[in-house]
Structures are given as structure tokens and as C-alpha cells.
Image (tube, rainbow, N blue to C red; front, top):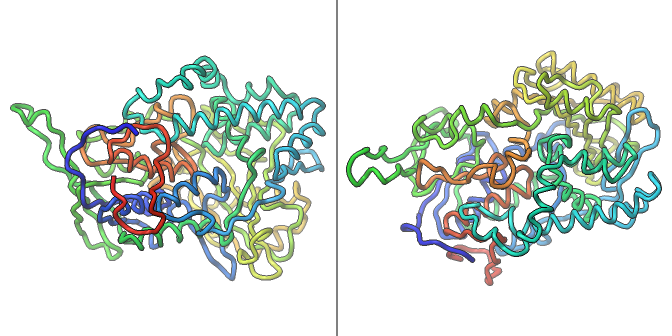
Length: 546
């Protein structure tokens, strides 16, 4: 472990945002011995990993794929427990189903690597052996990424100058410069296989035509390792982490909207003090009743959207990432979300089902191109948790969640309950329901819907302060990946750190847990690139120390 000397350690901390990153960060800081308070804008914690209940249905309103299980387990072990102790995880088989435009034959991705190799061989002669090589490469790159990149704050580049990195230098450079789409196309000809291997780019908030082929490592997660599901839904993860944090003394204040990050005065430009930067001293916020309050802290960690943190909570002269920086950033997609309670069964839909359009490139061009528009028909995702979890829906009913990637454009509008959203959002939702009905052979789907809620890009702005209404955060294109993504520490304010999907290491629940760990590394002055060692004491409690 590489360390540097630091000033006196903070004893109190405030975390802005009570999503999975904020809660995870608070839990780790409490383990470090700090007194921690989390301020969450919404009435309940969870952020993007939220829930909505209606008429006996329980909907996850955000992430729904449980990948990289070892990252979850490592995080829980840092808290003295394990994923097995905290969650009831079920392996899905099939991992997911894919429906292709114009084809009546779905493709089911199996739970094991060997089965998927056989599946690819059945789709394209010789593809099985090529998938074996593809996955071998994915495993190698994934292991390298975990060991040298994902758990690095990039506060120092010296730990990256290791023989294993330098040896792979030319190969890594090629993977960074070549887009995922052409990387896949050079190995497989069947369009279905190309789409299956290219779609993980969407999990990264990007397009396979702009995402670096480095991210073919994602195929290890679904095609080799398999897809899991936590019984009780993804908000079960939120409740578990929140409970562990509170057990260690963390205070979680909901309905608390941070309005300003307070700092010491900017130093004079003359004299010895000119070398000193302002320091975060706490935050101003309003409670659920709108009353203004203040909270002092030695350390401020913002797990809120980074654009909002920088441009709304800090004065211009203290912004590391001012508005002009964001003008050159690439947002991930916006999202049209549908939460539907359906009467009767939906056997043609698996727990996870993907619908892929025939004109693949045009679909992504409409979302990410210079002249964005809403694709119709759209490549989209349907989650049917009631296929696995009986608590997700009342008896005799199904719960489905639909995600349609759309341009990151808040002017598309907001959603609502039972058709009460903006007209454009509701019209888009009607078209999506009709598409699922036709492609999945559910002719009476619309008539069987008993509960309906829609969410649009404007909702992400209003509820999550999301930059440009993005569903996930800045896209993982080359200039926004790894050390190009930015720093998780303010360069203008001491004692101000960042966490979450809009900073290091990136998008997704596992990345958010790693992001929380990177806060701890910054606090300790740890510039190592590997995950933190698990404390020897496995009993939950305070004071593991640095």
C-alpha cells in the first residue's frame, strides 16, 4: 500500500446524497472512526436505486442487473460482513432473453460460459471457438482493469508503471482506440451476435460505435459469470447498506436539500497565505419544511451529480469543473422509464429481456448523434422481476419495468401516474407498449395493464439534479474513461471529495461501491491501485482505523 503524509485527519464528515454511493461512503467513513451525517434531498434514501409501490406491486425504479458480485462482496467485507450474509442472491437462467426485430426466434443467454459457447456456435458456425478467445481476452482485460485501474484514484501514476501494465501497453492502447463495434465485427458476422456483444456499451452510458473496445471486458460478466438477482429487489441493497451505516452511527437525514458547500475564505494573493487553498467547513441546507440550516464538518463528500455539485453548490472561483468544462463533455443517454402492473402471466418475457432493432447503428445515431431524436421503434430493455420474485407483484399479476434509451434532453418532458405525464412522454410510452406487445407476442398487453407510471428525462433533473437529464451520467467514451474521467478530489477546495457515477471510476452499482472506497483511499493518502485489504476483525463496529 502506498501512502503519503497528510494533515490532521478529519473527525466529522457530511455526505451529500443518500443514493448507494452516499450510503456506502458514509458506512466506510464511519468505520474509519468519523462522525458522519448523510443529507438526502428525497423523502427516502436510495437515489437512482429507488422503489415505487402501488396496488400491491413493488417496482425497482433504477438499476436491475446484479453484475460483478465480487465487488459487492468485497465492499460488505470491508464492513465486517458479506454479501451472502446480507442478501439472498439467485442466479438467473436464462441470464436474459433477446428479441430481434423481424424474427420470431428469441435468443436466450444461458447461465454458464459453456452453454453460451454452444449457443454462439448454433448461431454462426465457428463462433463458439471465437467466443472462447473473446472471453479469454475479456477475462484478462477485466482482471487487469480491476487490479490497476478501477480501484485507483489516479492521484499518482507511479503505481501504474508496473510490469504487467507496461507489458500490455500496446494491446491496451489498441483497445482504447478501436471502438467496440468494429472490434466485435472483426470476429463475428452474425448480426445477432454483434448486437449481443455490443449492447453492454449501454450499461456504460454510451454507444458500441464510440465506446472503446477495452470494454469488451463487460462480456465476461454476463456470458461467463452469469447474472444474479437479489430477492426483494435492488432496494434491498439500499436498506442493507443504510442499516449497516446506521449501526456504525451514521445519521441519515432525508428531505434535506443542500444549497451550498461552505468554505473558509479564499486566501489573499499576497503573503505566505497565498499558497493555502480554501477548505470545506460544512454545508448549508434546507429541511423538509424549507427551514434553512447549517452543518459543520471537517470533510465534505458530494455523492450528488458532479455537474450540480460544482456549478450550483460552489462559487465560480472554487469550481474545478465549471460550466465551460461540461460544454465539451459527452452525456450518457436519457431514459424513458415505464413501471407497469399487468394482469395475468407474461411467459414470453424472461426476467431480463432485450429488444434489438434491425437498424442498429441508426438507433444509436438518433440517441447520441448531432441531430438527436427518439428512436421508433427503439432498442429497449424489459425487466420482469415477478418471474423470479413473488413479492414483486400480487398473485395472478406481473411486474414489468421498461427502459428506453433516448437522447439526454430534458425538454422531452416528465412522466406521471396513469397517463398523467407530459403528452409527449405518454405518447412515447404508448408506442413502446405497442412494440413490446407485437415483438413479444402479447396482443392484449395494453388492455391488461392495471398500474402505470412513466418517468422522463426532466424527472431526472428535478429529482436527481442530473446533468442534462442523463439516466446514468457522463458516457464512457475514451476522453471520459479511467484517468480522463476527472478527479474525485476538488483541486480548488481542500477537504472536498467526490463520489458516484459521474466521477471515478464510472457508471453502475459496482462502480459506485468502488467510488466510495476511493474516497477512503483519498482520505488515507493511499495511491495504490488494488482494492483495500479487508480488516482482520470481521465483527461490525467502529474504529478499524487507517
